[in-house]
Image (cartoon, rainbow, N blue to C red; front, side):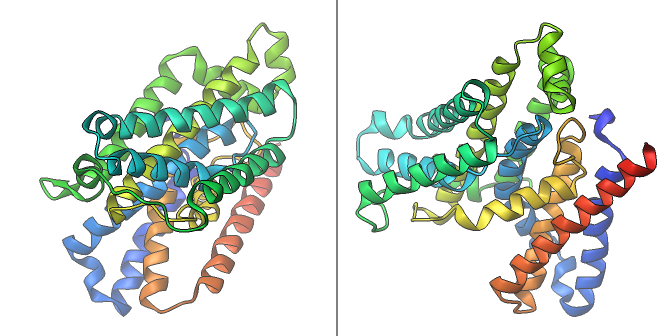
Length: 314
């Protein structure tokens, strides 16, 4: 984790503190424990998606299938619970995670084996998942419900801290350990810097790409499970609002969109910043269109900042 704590990764934490202080002038309740706890709960949904996105972006790729991996996992898990079969209900969460991993492998095939740009391939996969969901549901909201486990994961709390936030932190720590204590993390960053040189050094780059996309898919699926538990159901396009904020959280956290540099510490701060910013904009009754503009401006500003810093270092 320490290697990922840089000035860039600290920026979203400073920004979050500024938002809290500035927002409290307009909305004093922002300083209450209940409000901040609620923001941690909501940030966990975005944070899990951004965790997976960080892994892929460190490779120098991008995953645009996040919205419908999330939605597909939510539909699958709630459908299994709604079947009324105790065995299928117990398999709801594992099945959703397996679904996410499977889509990640499919993305890996397109990127690592077929050599299709990740932006194009994952966008096509997202479109295919959308079509399959519409065929399955007839365009209506899918039937089913969340299990008690899913509800507890999304809305429960332990000593005042949301279980969803604790789950996000546990996943983040596990992935950080995996990235820092195994060769996978070194290979991941090396591919982000220079994939061809990494391959020529003897690393099985396709295996790393497969594993990275599979992990990202599982993170997106887990986010879908928690969202379904939070809403007690799955619904069409529930993941669509998360794509731009997910990328924004990663970029704001200091991870280079070109790959090879960054980490989860900054992404955690980015997710907290985006969640709080969204909440404050909602309190101020700022419309969705302006929120999209704000997120876009933030992403562009951070890309320009990273480019300028890279130019200064070189």
